[in-house]
Length: 370
Image (cartoon, rainbow, N blue to C red):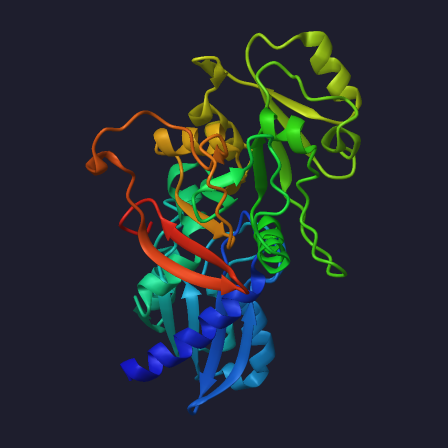
């Protein structure tokens, strides 16, 4: 039975992934209904505020759900939120057994759905492909357990680790396929962040551009202690269409702030540390705004600061087939001086993917998953 359970849970995981970029602040959840060894219903949580995965799978199964087995990647909810409790719907559908990948990490509802179903005579087994289910929802789990967003670092660099020439030219380090993947990543995460240096040098849009596909747009955040961002920058000019938040320091001019507000920009006045925005305070602020995930795109001082303060969770690094071979080229990270290799930051669970001649490395900055 365990082999069958893993097989059907993998199918539920496949369905869960279909909701990428549309469910935040909710998790990615997939479900399948199995009767007589066949999948008779399937579904995922498609968008925030919409029916949960269990509901969609039960509707798909219709009358075939009675006496069947429900496989779901996350414990069914047992509380009223944007939608009614899934545990009650499972019971009403006549499901005989529920197989759960992982329990709900939310302390307020943890274990509630499974306990409710057991008390009402449903057989419940939990922990099937537990790690796979947790890996799928790392961003949600961190936010649910800490209240701060999951932080992903992203950079494109040459083989010798340079993100731009000494003049700041970075077009293009990576190829079009790599950049297309990076835009998909942007639409999966809640917010994207750069420093004022990048904003001034590149005048970026920071939107997710996926051709004809309609992309979910991240909130665009700039670290700008003194509010130096130009009022005619692309970010400011498009602030009414796509949200822009500027994180500024305690001494930023009120008059400058008011001018940005009139353009549709939101400002976040935060404490400063050593003349820079306090990143830990920023993450606390973003968590309070239900920002569950943050993509940090640099430059070197910003990426290095998230590393030095141990605030980054994982990374996507793209390497183009170029060697700049210039000591004054801009490195991917600025950080503290280190004399021993043992002082280097460690990366874990490294995976490699190719986009033509580009190579992408992904991994975590901690050994264990959340």
